[in-house]
Amino acid sequence: MNCRGNRYSRSHVTLNPDTDRKFWQYSMHEIGIYDYKAVIDFILQKTGVKQLSVAAHSEGTSAFFVLASQRPEYNKKVSVFIALAPITYIQSTGPTLTTILNLSHIIIKKLKIFDVEEFAGFNSFAKTLTDALCSQGMIGYELCFNILGSITGFNPENIEQEFASTILGHFPAGTSLKNLIHYVHGYRHKRFVQYDYKLNNFAVYGSFNPPVYDLKKVTTKIALYAAEGDEIVKIKDVERLRIELPNVVHYQVINDKKFNHIDYMWGRNAHVVLYQSLFELLFKFN
Image 1: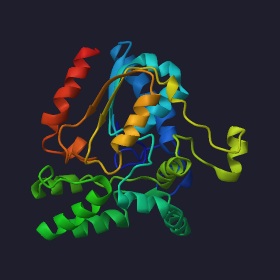
Image 2 (image 1 turned 90 degrees about the vertical axis):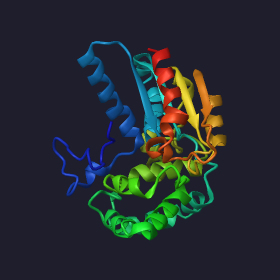
Image 3 (image 1 turned 180 degrees about the horizontal axis):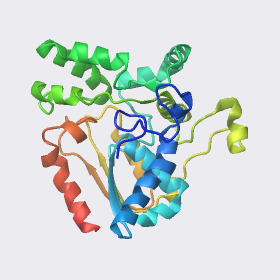
C-alpha cells in the first residue's frame, strides 16, 4: 500500500494537504492503527478469505508492528508477516545517519521555523534539487547515490545508472515531518515507543513518558530479513527485535554482503538473493 502523505496518497475526505496543516499530523502510529487496519479489512471483505499474508519494507514494518501490538486482534487476520529491513530499534545505524540523528534537534527546529509539515514531497524543493543534481549524467548519478548510499548503504552493481532515472521518477515521494520525528524519538529513548509529546505526554497517555509498543502482543508468524550492507537497519537491531517477538518462524541475513536498505526494492539481484525465499514462505504459510 502507499502510506498516507506520499505522492500517491494525498486524497482526503475533508482536508487539503496543500493548505491544511492537520493533514500532516500523523506518523507511523496512525499509519498502523488506521491505514493498515483499513487496507486489511478491505481486502478480507472483498475476497471473503479469513487471512492474508503481508510483506513490508522499512517504514511499512514499523507501522505493522504498531498495528499488531496496539490492535492484537489483527494478528489472527495475518497468516505471515514478512518484514524486510524491519525498523523498530534504531541504535546501530551507520555513521552518516547517526550524525543526522544526533543533530536532529537542530534540523527539526530549523524546519519548524519554516513551517515545514510535509517533508521531501514530490513537488517540493527537495525533489526539484534531487532531480537537478541526479540527472547530470554519470557525475550526477555518482553524487546522488553516494550521498543516499552514505545513509542507506549502496552497491552500484545493484543499481546501475540506467535504472537510476526510473527511481528518480518516483523518489522522493514525501511524508510528514511528524513521522520522521517519531523515529527520532525511538533513537533517543532507545526503545520502540509511541510519539513523545514531551510536556503533553501526561494529557495524551496519562504518563510522563511515551508508552512502549508491546512486541509480545505481536503473535502472528513473523519472517525477518536483514542485510550486512544496510546502514539504517543493522543486524544487531534486527536480532534485538528477533528476541522480543514471540513467533519468529524465519530469520535470514541476505547472502550478499553488499546488499543494503534500498536493494530490497530496487536491487537488480533481489530476485536471486531474496524473492525466492520470500515466495517459499508465502506458499508455506498460505
